[in-house]
Image (cartoon, rainbow, N blue to C red):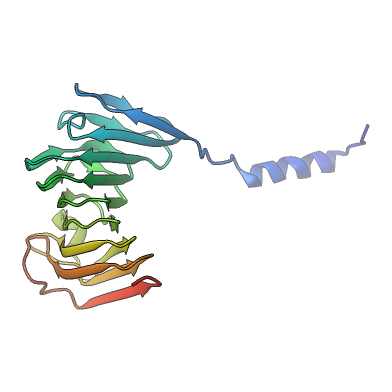
Length: 220
């Protein structure tokens, strides 16, 4: 057997404490139903799968840890507005392949860091986001509106972050709110040929307060 010393044991314990507890990188899949769902998520990285039929304005999602993604797939000829009630769900990913625009009300959704239009051909609107979330177009060809609550952008040096990748095309991206705009808009361009024709504020008006648009990335 290997001999040990008190100093050696102390050093080993200190190394374990310094390393900390490994992060939980597992993924848990959760499916919403056509009824009213009250879901308390896990401490892992949850993926919540929903459709236009299963995500309802009465559903409630509560997270206790991890980085969580709500994936919503919609294909409808009728414009719909859905209230999202969530705490701690970081990524909202919408795929709208219908002919009618889809709106998601975020007044009651906290902890969002990313608003993603993924492979959408129809318009996606995020309304009244409560935090300065990144706006992502990933393989999307529909227009995107990201309307933020006024306290998010009421300052004089607010910065918006947009990422566009994988051959995304948008005739219009609306970002801001009805009263204020981001002073700086950063656009990160990823893989593929990507196009934004026009950027307007959250009220679909021409930009007036934005003084700088910064484009970075290796894509087109």
